[in-house]
Image (cartoon, rainbow, N blue to C red):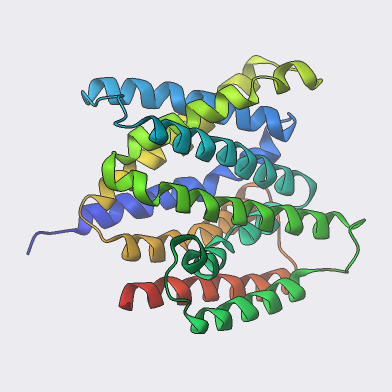
Length: 285
């Protein structure tokens, strides 16, 4: 049997980098929409040259594929905007834990989007995840920034689940790098107006941080994930991907000195545990 250790390691490293990306929401002193624009711009830039070096074709087979990837790009811009906005108004832990609900949304909505038989067992982790969310919430008041942050992070998780549905057919036809390039490019084009609508102070430090976020923690991370998927099953990779909130919270603790409250840790543990449950159930299916 072929040794798959290095491919599993590539996925772990990719998830580690993805977990680190949330910290830029605190480090970069720019509006969330501008951070997202920088991220997708530099990601598309680096992926463009990666595809050229790998001699990959940029051509898509059908016009409908361009429309599908453009739509996913719009959702991607929204997903990352709500993600960074949630982190900016609350904490890295809140943002990452809220987004991790995407596994639950995926399990609940998959049968609706693809007309498959609904698995009622998926209601169990969904209900338990809501308990986890309830534990995290400081109060049922949208005036509280933690409540706001968790709300937008969960919306971001829902957007990411919808992106995965749009990508389901595309990744069977095109390489992950091609899919990511078109989505990042589409998100860049959609976000160009924010450069003229928002007031912000730009500097070389912010530019370097955005290049690092888009190049290393987006383009490189995504490429590593693709390399891992070439030999590792998607279900196994999804289990590893559920480690992202764990990595993110640890990074925030050591580098930002963010210590989550006990209720965030307890509720987060339930949410992440349910995400693992869903991923493992799909692996056995």
